[in-house]
Image (cartoon, rainbow, N blue to C red; front, top):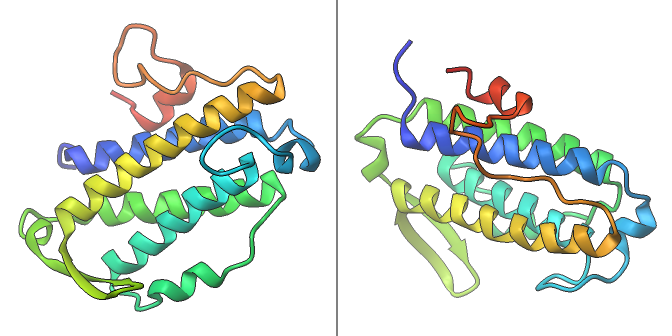
Length: 174
């Protein structure tokens, strides 16, 4: 087994952070999940659906799946448990993609479908954008969760030995 690459570590972090966040979201009622909240997207449901949608969009481009903008036609999911299952499966897909990366693949181009037309992007910046995007919107979900009255989970310090939580140990065993 080879040492994990930074992209593999970021994919593990992404999966762990989503899993940790959904552990708290599971306690919400559907009404709490869909009620208006402060933020760019006006509810936790819309924020979390956006995170999943963007994952699906970029993973499709990275895998050369060809679904492109048609992914934006998927129905919104207002059940946190169902959304958590879909996010977990998508996170594992992203992790597998990152584990299979080679240095040469990082410089390959992938086609992304944009409303303005097709755009070719390199794999490395696509992945960096995807991870940054997810961190950004999980931060917004963090504030929205706090607005519900539930304590948001801490989603950092997972790499450090000092204070590493048990749930992170499963994703970062050493």
